[in-house]
Length: 315
Length: 283
Image 1 (cartoon, rainbow over the protein chains, first blue to last red):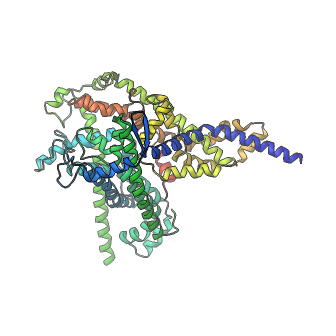
Image 2 (cartoon, rainbow over the protein chains, first blue to last red):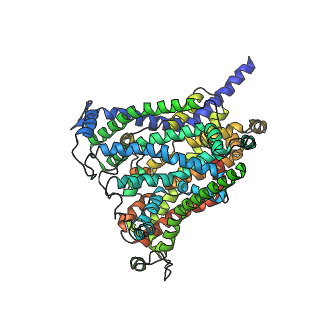
Image 3 (tube, rainbow over the protein chains, first blue to last red):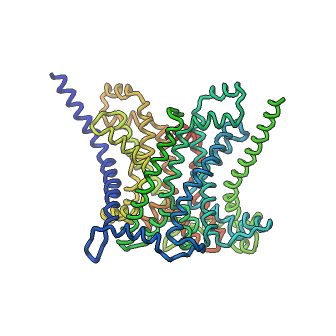
């Protein structure tokens, strides 16, 4: 009985210790996640008129209406408007991540562990985009493509004239942003995939080689199935880019364009940064919520379907 | 015969991939080397048409000039200091809190433990979109908008990647060290700070370097919530329009932003690559 009492006393002290140390982290989490997310949902249904706040669906109606009805079109392309171009640009991020960046980085990672000469040097260089400030990386991408830059001048010599402002017109503007994302994102994907490929036991490759498997067989029959969970994660990340990516187009264009370069998140970011109008912010909250409600189930569906393809592998 | 042919084909493929690797590596390094080279030219020499050659006259004061350069009343030097302060404090707070919470969750049993672990994983997997306006509202409500304290408050959110990494490190550390210390009369705090944190030094350093890189490079948080006290990442973006046309000066700014973080990375390169590759990301 005495022992039990001592134990509970000790347990009580344990709880006190944990409570003391976790108090701030948990409180911070509850405030930033609870307050922000609940607040964001509430904002989506709010409309300020003078001093009063009304509860309404108006924000959603306006967001949807704008997409179909807005006549503002600074993209230079007839069949678009400044709202549809945002959706198109955003969806493009999923397409290029899944169908270009991902296969490219798979091939890169595969060959990096294939006794490639200078593999370690490449690994360090490919990691660079992860440590350089994105502002500096965007400048490093832009400057050679500007007049007097080495790529601009080289292309001129072989007869290709780049526009003086790459981001002035759609679709050139968006292609330039996508190329940047592929160029800068490759390093990150290669690090993750090399990690996954590195975890595959060496014996599997050895026995495959004894059976006469070549690069292609090894790649499709061993690598892809065995690192499938990592691939699924990168596909999911690529799909969430549709809703979350804004910094790249924002920094690359640096305020030199109107409309044609926006993504969904960039519009929200810009409005938040520049607008003092409560209703404009409410509308952005509604826009974020609306697109999340539409897009998130699609992402989950793809994730579930893909996860089922090669079940039970984990490297 | 067929096998030899196949072998030759593989060799060709390998060298083609090697060539692509070299090209990609050059595309990553070339802009920075080019900017570095042009940092040492005068504006006059650059605009007169020496874009690609070595400087005729090496000019070393562009870096000093850019540090003195003012954007909206704030010098680039003070932005550099602001970056150093924000990065040091932000990293210390974030990693410190992550380590302490990870230790509690890994080593103590208490109600709600599973909820914390679940929430940490959930927030990593589920992105929240369109909440920026609400975040601004919250910062206004707490009266910490437009201040270093506010930015540090946001950086102090510790249930993320660092928490998960350190949680798994603490799980592998045996509790017998703590028991030995207990016999010597150490209390719970002493065990944490004198025994357990030093034992997890390796992963804590790796996580700290990565966190420092993230904060040093962060644009959105200081831009939105500390607009009057610019960090280098924010200032560099504005330098492009403020020093419009003076490319050597802009390039010097890039160097000031990139070189400190490159040195930090070079010093801890092995720890970082080992930890990110080994820790990796799994679906």
